[in-house]
Image (cartoon, rainbow, N blue to C red):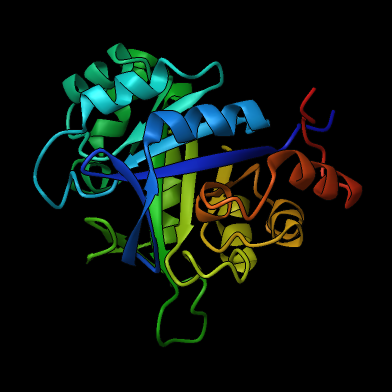
Length: 260
């Protein structure tokens, strides 16, 4: 049985507004999260991910009211990340309407958090987000790709592939892998890094960073072995139509759910 690949729209939120940058900098405003989420869902996106990108750096919790407003607009799976440090934080996000939570910096700081959230809410509700940059030196920059935390501001002292394996062993249901080298460039996903992580774990891997064309999606879902591909700016700014994107990648042999 061939599993359907998912196309996911990401909402990077700062101060209650959706923003987008290039390689985690040069941030520009993209709109209201609830409105954009509704628009993406109606267009045929399979899931929505909302990431409060400055919550950890600013030392605060996720914007609960923003989550609640956005969840009210959706009829597809909804994931929220950013500023989730405890099981109680996760519970508040689920109470606000999310189906899954994504943890990143907090998972590095307290790996047991993965176990705790998984045991309470189920592994399917826990996504571990990994922001990774290829190593600048060494014989294998992909295998040695480094994990960064605090919105890509700090090196975590961990290798992406090994951290993905540990996250899985602790009960993560999915890995959200963002290539910091490709983020916002629209030059294509890092298929090699994605494939390396996908080969290392049995749980689904969501590829993020670099979406620009239908070919990019097809490449990472096939060659990169990703179970899902996530994008932000190409959807927010009307560069890509979800229906047309899915039809195009279906022609390239990728099994996707086509909008009615």
